Each structure stands twice: as C-alpha cells, then as structure tokens.
Length: 110
Image (tube, rainbow, N blue to C red; front, side, top):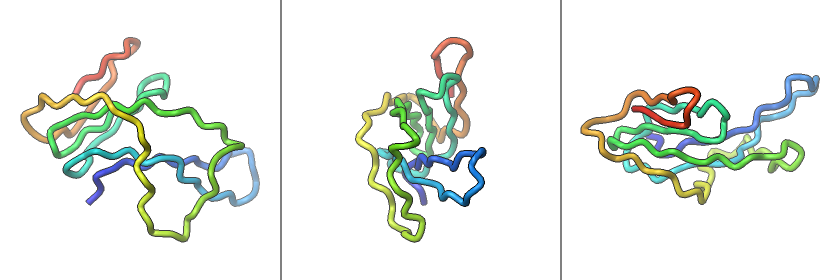
C-alpha cells in the first residue's frame, strides 16, 4: 500500500513534444495507507487524509518548471519523501475518507 503522496510536474499543454512527467516530491509520515487528498484554493497547501485516522496538511514548495528535476520514468523506485513538516490533525476516531477546504478561508475540514 501507499503510505506517501507523490507530486508530479505534468508536461505543458502548449508543447507538442512528448515530454514525460517529472517527479517533484513525495510527502510521507503516514502509518497506514492514504485515502483522500485536497488542494487548497490557492494550491499552496495539500491536505491528505489516511487510514491512520489523521489528516496531514503539507505546505507545497513552488517549483519553477525550467528547473524541474529530470524524470526517471523507467524506475520503479519510490521517491524519497520530501522533508516538509506537515501540520498534523489527529483527533479523528476512524479512517479519514474525505477532506475539504472552507473557501475563501484557509480552514480545512475532514
């Protein structure tokens, strides 16, 4: 099972060549499988719910597409988790199956 969330850079739609997806980051720290995720309205935060009865909110680093690391699509290796300390919301009694952002505020609900 997956105990991390991977972040990929998709090729630009305006390019006509077959550019591969590029692995940018992996967010971990879960003790059981992840079950849901939701981007904040401004795409700077990522809330991830899991079967370990927690939600972790990660601040997502911004990436310059021209500086993105090369893709390694032929490899089945797991990307190393990005060293980003999440906000941990762990007061749930069971697995978290959905999480939401209250627009326009930055509050998360699960």
